[in-house]
Length: 91
Image (cartoon, rainbow, N blue to C red; front, side, top):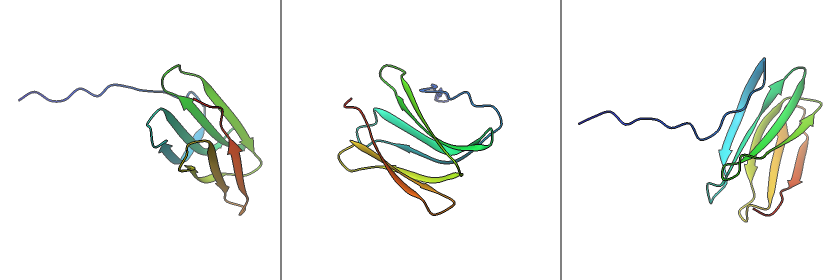
């Protein structure tokens, strides 16, 4: 029995980054990544079908993120206690 080959679905190029949270949308079409890079917090959402990436920057480290059940919003929490709800474009 041969070993399964892993296939890269998405990459995020961000020098000097710390990733704290990663999550797929319920339909597995979107991938969200949150953390800290280049002196600022970030939340990135990548559409795995077309490769588009949306980036939101924050003044502090993004420590958690998750998609709403309907997949229309991304909820982001920072290490400073800030909670932000970001609308997502229809996919």
